[in-house]
Amino acid sequence: MNYRHAFHAGNFADVVKHTILTRILAYLMKKDAAFRVIDTHAGLGIYDLQGDQAEKTGEWQDGIGRLIHVKLPAQAADLLAPYLDAVRARNPEGKLRYYPGSPFITRHMLRPQDRLMAFELHPMDADRLKENFAGDFQTRVTQLDAWDIFGTHLPPKEKRGLVLVDPPFEEKGEFSRMVQSLEKAQKRWPGGTYAYWYPIKEMEEVEAFVKALKGTGIPKILRLELTIRPSSQPPRLYGTGMMVVNPPYVLEEEMRVLLPVLADVLGESGQGRWALQWVAGE
Image 1 (cartoon, rainbow, N blue to C red):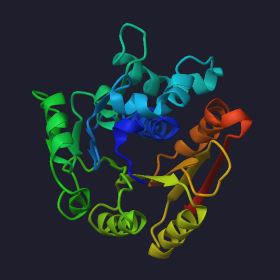
Image 2: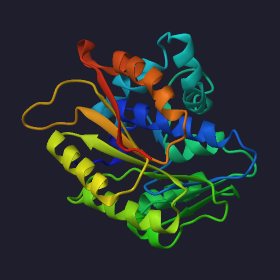
Image 3: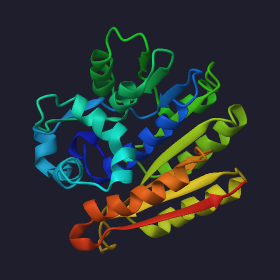
């Protein structure tokens, strides 16, 4: 897929992904006890929408560029407020120029007792990420292959938190690596919440992923998807998905409110569609 994120920052997939992220964080914040977020593919942390890479595709204009100015139904507006607040915090003058990636969105929401561990393999991106969080004692940035994390960095000492897995899908086998990493993670930290992002280009790949997840026997896996247009040949990105393991009990209800609204705002010419189902229940 060649998903170097600067080309795609703020697109429809980011909007859905980061909406889900903020709803999980909002739930974790309901208890005073500290939590930790582990971001496995953290990227640069923040992206200039007027930069060469973002301007080359312009994908953000049909993502956050649409959502940030639209009038939303009251309930959806309340649920989207933490996400949109995080975006606006990086654009204090009101004009949308900078898009915060998952590390900056997470950091925006952390309380003093919470922590963020951000991992990035690409050397230049990892260096930039370290610069972006220099002096921040609540955030630790490490250059490391994400797939090594699951055997070494779980469970966190807080025993509460989220592992966000957002692979670039630059190499074949990412779906298989996600399943393998979840199996390893569940053995070390069965009570953690895991959010796995995936692109929807060919539904056969997604259904094979779902089948593999079912085969693990791991319970409580919620599948959330949104497409902005029908599939086509040759295959192109037309949808975004997230598998949430051990989701907050309120997430299903919240996403039943949000997904129809996001499908309406982000869909091309009224073609937005959404789906929610349990891959595995209790």
